[in-house]
Image (cartoon, rainbow, N blue to C red):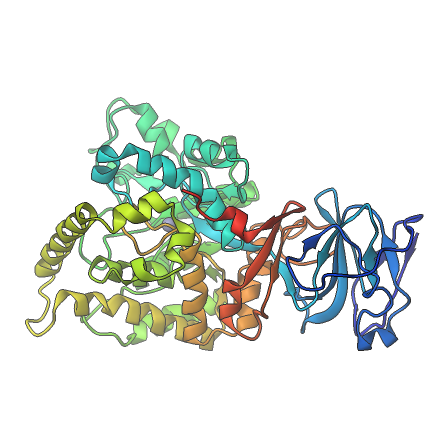
Length: 540
Ligand SMILES: [Zn+2]
């Protein structure tokens, strides 16, 4: 039977469905109110005494199957404010009921939600599950077992930090297969292999065969006819064929790199406006999200001209003084246009801040670092061997900066702090202009750095947004409902509503009061299965 229940202010938009015949024998006396909220024991005390506010609530009902989260404060991003003293019932991996006063019977699994906050599982719409995190090629060659340990822990680390859904923007079939073969892993959506221009970012070396060209999802541009390898038929590398490859791999989006070389450090070819327009037409025709990697004024402009759905980075390159931190009029203008166009932007702050860890390895001492990476890997990263490798990388960065003619008064670490300052001030401008933000972290941001470990990188990104002044409600929404809607997943994800997939987080603190609440995850509910956070942390 279906009926509406509870005052309208409490549950304005939900029609609640109650299971019939679910009333069970009286539950036993409540003994333990404190302790882990996962328990099979229904509790007499809670019955009929949900809270003083329960005077406005009908008498409690017992639900005797599935999982019942009792007496929780639920925070769903489409609502203006949290709703206290609610029970949420999960059956068959879905949210089945939401109402005040529902209690678990003896055959149901009870989760005590008292003094807890229930939010949707978080979504990161910019990850790379095939990247090797803090291990570069040399480290992997010397210690293949560390890569294995990293890959084993990877899916669990995303979950431990609350991320139950990911969108990978550029990966190989085998990397995705390994990721989802893990017994516990976030739900993974992807864009297949991102589109590269011959000789461009990510495809600097010519492909050795067709398999390599397909893996890079190369796109043929007539202007590059002289450089195009003779063994590749250009008709196999049109935008339509590239999108075919993404569709065949099960992708929900197409990502195209527009990267001319990180503000003049390199000089790479980029897709022409005709090429981008062709990708727009092909993705629209097939209902796919078009994502453009862009981080400078020119590439943002190209993304806007192409009517992209998502810009996969914040803005930190612009013309003029390379060492100026204040965004010039060109940057302000393109941000203004992004707001008018309604394009979604992933600001990716922590990826830029993470680069600072090349010179300052402070993150190694963050207690959360050991929650993100296996112990053997943490031990390696603290070893002399890894320190020596870090010095080599520092030298490489010094050489790059020497080419950029850093002023004599500026050391490299100071020069590197310019990009974080820039990406912070442009996010502030985006906030003022009301640019639509999506939570995408670019985890783990390439290979070989310690600054962006899986799970923790997302956690740090949440804090970066809060530091800039993004309202906590906007942060939660960007990482749940807005991400779900932008990728066509809101039928299943993004809010706490009956019928949606039961990907939920139980927190000990309110994420609308403090971003630190994301450090208080108690239980992760993935596809309806409750997982204590401690069970997801690295064991070796
Ligand atoms: Zn990326």
